[in-house]
Image (cartoon, helix red, strand yellow):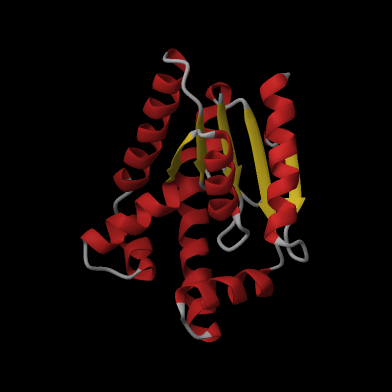
Amino acid sequence: MNIVFSGLHGTGKSTIAKLVADAFKFKSYSTGMAFRSLAEENNMSLEEFSEFAEGNLDIDKQLDEKIKRIAKNARENGQNYVFDGQLPAYILQDLSDFNIYLKCETQTRIKRMSKRDDQSLEDKKRETLVREKSEQERFETLYDINVLDPKSIMETFHLILDTTETDISEVFEICKVAVEAAFEG
């Protein structure tokens, strides 16, 4: 079974994906962590690497092809995987069995990431808005996907949760029950 957690930065998708993967003993892959690793390898901040990626669309294509290979291999070998990122549900399509979308108000997302990364609110806000604008433009250019389109979200995801005012443990419990039901179904 391949499960996808998606949403903008700071919605809790990586945290919840890891908790669910651990709870069910599934393997996991985070496109966000892979992107961060590439930024570090290139000695760039996320903001700088996002701008770099705008001129090097092969970076996104390589990450997306990798998740397809992992998901296909998992399916063929009876493995279970949890993916998190903005595009996996759209990229994997039929290779994904259950898609969960987490959403959250922008200010709350910025506060969460500011605390997590020990950055000022203003710095984190600037970095995040630049990064998300860059990603949205790249995703539309590469795949004609608008990750903010409500209709597309409704058509792609099986469960949509607002994490703005929900404790992480509550979000985890809801997702855990949903995954259990999908796994049994």
